[in-house]
Length: 149
Image 1 (tube, rainbow, N blue to C red):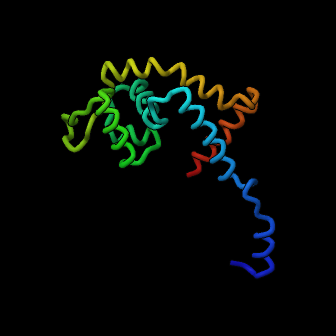
Image 2: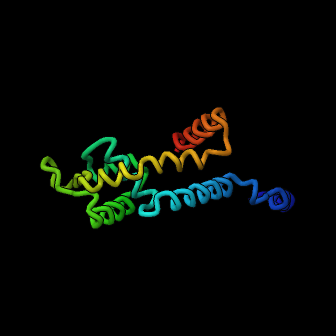
Image 3: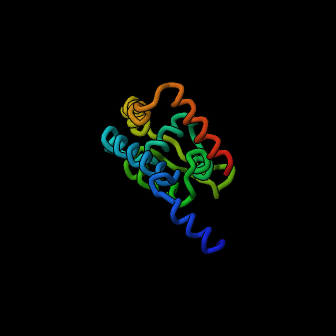
């Protein structure tokens, strides 16, 4: 834990407003507020799921979780809710009955198309305070943080 003097220095130097986790949480809260205003019928994880399935087509639930950065329990909950809304369907993988395949229904594809423009607006509004160079720099730096896991 360090010497009492060093511990005191850390406590004196620590400012919550300067901590990266606190700053990222505030940025995320801002983004979520914009998201809920522009796409009120979906959570970000639900829309991400629709968007990823639209992008790649039929996919295993496990693979979809990996590609959308969701753990298995979260992915299952998202798929269950989207399924109840009639936006995705699931079926066993004929080559591995333990695996569940997920695909968009016609209603799910329509919901994606109805909201994709708003999703782009969310990104634009979230990044509005930044110029194009800063946007690229932010994406690059956050990408580095993610890849170092």
